[in-house]
Length: 209
Image (cartoon, rainbow, N blue to C red; front, side, top):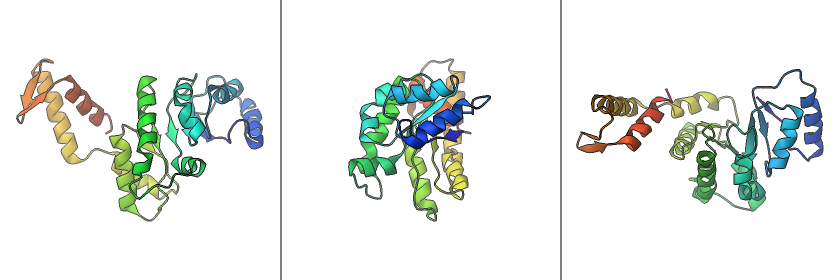
């Protein structure tokens, strides 16, 4: 995957001209400061079949979420919350509750356009493993499927936090087994009703293995 500079900026235009010279498309292109379908179309004009990962990192990008998410070639959305805070003047506390509306909006746009699960922003504390784990687990709660890293040492921690725990796997497997035995009908397990939404949740969890 390539991360280019933002289309419309001088370096971005240079990147697009270079992208057009490639004999084949890269696996994907991450597009910073994505604020319109027009900017994304410029990337697809350089490489028609390349999947796009737009970075939502400005107020304009937030306002254009529906347009950006629905643009041709978009594979999944990415949050760039550090730039988003710089653009909007928002200052986030440690738990980043101030950014909850942004993450929720990206989650909803992802679902409406049936995109691959979104990618959350970086954790800037490169030596704080607990913060990294907490941030990654929060991303999962929003339905995200990945997280940007600001340093290579974070990769292992992110992978570990994205993986289901042993207890989660046991629960999910029991749910799927109970559903199979019931032939798709509603069934009780440990005193709780198991119906299609619960089974879907279990299957999504197992898909993270």
